[in-house]
Length: 222
Ligand code: SAM
Image (cartoon, rainbow, N blue to C red; front, side, top):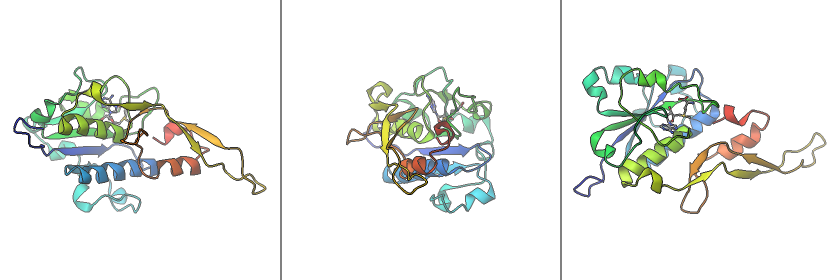
């Protein structure tokens, strides 16, 4: 909130940095897009190549996608000072006052790898001022959700409730003989904002994707 009590309008930018557009990533981007619309804030997915731009699984309006990179969108050092990079290596944590300081918040559209490979560094070297969301690595959609709560709702980072490394029961996969296999529990390796129903907020379709990709390492899906 601004001092006048008006909710400020910010732009949330995710720069796609991976060579592919994975299914899990499209679900995260779709989720960020729909939550931004519901919160009446702008979303921009930048750095898309032409093939990803038209990918059917990406349900983001054309006006919220661009093939331009943030380097081209903000060419001068002065313009970059208005954009806050959410950076796990930043020295300062994000605070509600940053909602007044910055017009846009920038995130890396990258894999949540373990140990983190610091690919956010590709954006850091462009000179955007950085803020951290606490010491733990989050998924990109959780990082955007957390940032929105802090800069738009004016809540401090430490006031936000999370569900840490939740377990989900997933429907059993049929065996080769067509009979149901043993029920499985999938443990998610990150923390998630706690929703109004007490459950962790995950992108729509993510659990179904985890079930269908059960043979993949979970860290390759997030
Ligand atoms: N493994 C990646 C790395 O090494 O940079 C982190 C990827 S994280 C899944 C995706 C994006 O979410 C980051 O680029 C950053 O913008 C944001 N993010 C995630 N956790 C964060 C944290 N604790 N503080 C600040 N930003 C964070």
